[in-house]
Every structure is written in C-alpha cells, then in structure tokens.
Image (tube, rainbow, N blue to C red; front, side):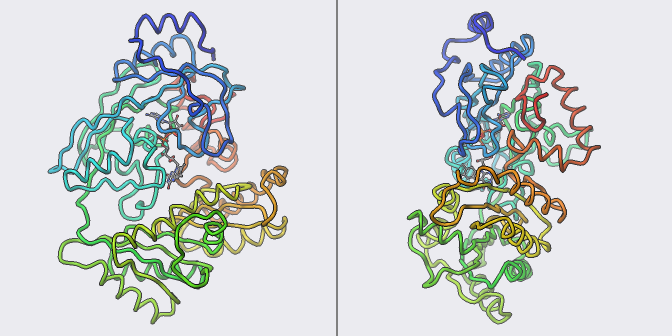
Length: 472
Ligand SMILES: Cc1cc2nc3c(=O)[nH]c(=O)nc-3n(C[C@H](O)[C@H](O)[C@H](O)COP(=O)(O)OP(=O)(O)OC[C@H]3O[C@@H](n4cnc5c(N)ncnc54)[C@H](O)[C@@H]3O)c2cc1C
C-alpha cells in the first residue's frame, strides 16, 4: 500500500477539475468517540460517478488506499484510517453527490445519491406524502451512502427493517474503478448473486456506493407515543408481545430505557423535563403508527389498560400533543449524548434473540460486578433485540482510570453475547474497532468466504484497509 505522493496527486489533478480537491479539515481525521485518529490524507469530493470512477481507478493503479467518507458519524472507526496504517490515503467524501435524483411516489421508490443527508431524504419523502423510515439520532448529519455501507438500524427497524432492507438497487464504483449501474427499482429480481446485499454492510471495503434506489412507505395517518414504566426487562418483552397482539405491525418503535439512562440525563442536564416523580428502573418508549380510520391514541390507551391489568406496567404517560411526543423522544435521543458526557469505559452495540435478553442482562451485570464497581446503561432498540450495553465508571471517577480493564470488559460481554447466540455488532458495523471480535467470534467458513469475496473484488486491498478484516 502506498501513500499519496506528489506524482500521484499531479496525475490526478490533470484528470479532475480543481474543485474536487478540498482542504482537509479536522473532522475528516476524527470519529465521534475519539478512538481513532488520522493525521493526513488527500481529501477529494467528486460531483459525479465518473469522477469517483477516475479516482478509484487511479488509486487501484497506484495501490493507494481509499477511505470512503459519508457524514463521519460512524461509531466503529471505519471512516478514519489511523496514520500507522497509512500516513496519506485518499479520503473520498461523497458530500457533494447529494441530489435526490428522482422520486416515484406510485412505486414507493426514491433514487438518491450517496451524499444525501438522511434527514433530507426523510423530508423529500414527506414532500410527496411518503415515509422514508430510516430514523436514527444522527440523521441530521449521516448520509445515505454511509448508512447503507454500515447497514444502519435506528428506531424503526422493528417495523421497516434496517438500511439494507430498504435498498432495492445501487450504483457503485468497484475497487478497480468500473461503474456498476444497478439502480433497479424492482422488488423481485432473482437473477443470481445479490450485489446490493453484498455492498450494503461492506463498510467501504468492496467499493464506493454512489447512489441507491430505496423503498418508501405510506405515512401512518395516526401516530401515538407513550412512555410506560415496567418492572423489569422481562415485563418489557411481555409488553411488546401484548402490543403486537393488539396492533400488529402498527408498533413502529419499542425502546428500552434504564434508570441509569435517566440518572445520566439528569447528571448531564439533558433530556428536558422528567415525566415521573421518581426515576423508574426500567421503562419503554413505544410508538404506534396506524392507518386511516384508526386512532393510535386510543390504541395506546387500550394497551396501557390491558398492560396494567396484566401487571406488566406500573405507570405511564401517553403523549397528548406533538410537543409532548417530541419531549418523550428527546429523553430517548439524548441518552447517547448523556452517555458521552459521563464517558463510557466500554460501549457494546449487541443484538440477542429476544427471549434471552433478561437472562443476558442478569448475567452480564453479575459478571461485571465481579470485576469491580461500574455503572451500566443497558438501553436501546429492544423491539428488534438490539441493546446498547455500555459500561461507565462509578460516580466521582473517570473512564481513563479504567483503561487497563477495557479489553477484559469487552471480552466478558462479547463472550456472553456469543454464548447466548447474539451478535457483537448489531447496527454499527465492524469497522476498525471490532475487527478482532470478528476474528474471534466469526464462523471460520463464513470468514473464509468473506475473504475470498474481498480478494476477488479488491485483489490489491485498496478499499478501506483494516476495516472488517485486520490489515495484514
Ligand atoms: C449520536 C449518534 C447516534 C447514532 N445512532 C445510531 C443508530 O441509532 N443506529 C445506527 O445504526 N447507527 C447509529 N449511529 C452510527 C452512525 O450514524 C451510522 O453508522 C451511520 O450509518 C454512518 O453514516 P455516515 O454517513 O456518517 O458514514 P461515515 O461515518 O462517514 O462512514 C461509515 C462507514 O461507511 C463507509 N462509507 C461511507 N460512505 C460510503 C459510501 N458512499 N460507499 C462506501 N462506503 C462508505 C465509511 O468508509 C465507513 O466505513 C449513531 C451515531 C451517532 C454519532
């Protein structure tokens, strides 16, 4: 692997317009948790797929690494290549490929370039009375190309699936610079291997996504949100079953919030007013979205009554207005910010079969307690089995004091996740952060197949080296 040098840059400047070459600001060298840091790179921001193709072909010819860059919000270090791996890679930002190319409301399809911010895509869909359901706390800054590349999840996976499930077709530049024109708008296309599924979740290791055709949905006519207090995670799961029995697919979000999460919000001065007198140990933010002629408010009132009767919930509040709904969501969406304020020793984005989650939480808490005094905030997208199980120092201490224990904590948690049949990465990807875990917990036959795919498509290994697989 070679660094960008003067010759390479001069050759590229002779092929591409001047405005593709950008000043490298610090945001391209850092990632949100500060775990990976780059020092340099040649920042290129092409305007179209042909320019992406020229850049990647030049990198392929010269063996220069390419780091695709979307919104920079990824949480596993995929968008930042530390200088030990390569001092000066090409950083390929898709930020100027940000056009919504076409919307087909009758087909429920939108075709968007990779650099479109997710919130803008949601707004474009709303403009034609449709829903683009990918929704995550970073959606004001993450870009659809980055979300597809990490197969992002968020709060609506329970009902609408993850980013991969929303993608019908792709336009992409393969590692040798060839353009794959795959922007189909088909829901059925059984014509061999599925490159869409391969590139989604590849975290920039198999090529650069430049545009995607994506599914849209009818907008629910009636939306209702409630925060319900439950005794424990098992009661939360029983409440999910009850909600699904009562309103079926109408349950669009089902988020677990722990008492520690509320305590952290208070400590950080975030989240806004608290709806209960005392901080509940466990609660669930539930959202229903129903069709015409149905009232989500009524459905939530019925659910609340039935759950009280079944002793699954002990308290709760149903939002009576848009402002109250926003206030409830703010509690949930500020939790990652509060976590950052406290400073996690180690964060774990895990998924588990639903029924084992209560046992996992008990065993993980007990295992950690045997290692020292920690605070745990286990919260997240319970409805789809995805928890963020994050470990923090006790009050009055800072995470730096526990640096020596990070590796042991991660191993204890991920070993347990593995034993319970779960995944060490639910929605953030593998990136550079979890490449060792993939080696440790990945099925060897699957890993061998993945390596064969990587070396078939990218024999020189220029695409985002060190991501998913450790750099050799
Ligand atoms: C506050 C906060 C909340 C979050 N909440 C969630 C959540 O609820 N659910 C969730 O899933 N994630 C969440 N994330 C993580 C993050 O937002 C997602 O991983 C998102 O998908 C990353 O998109 P991005 O555009 O910022 O990509 P980047 O961070 O720029 O890149 C991510 C990866 O994709 C690659 N990549 C980027 N663009 C392309 C492209 N066009 N072609 C090929 N490869 C590319 C990069 O090389 C990198 O490996 C959160 C992050 C933050 C900071």
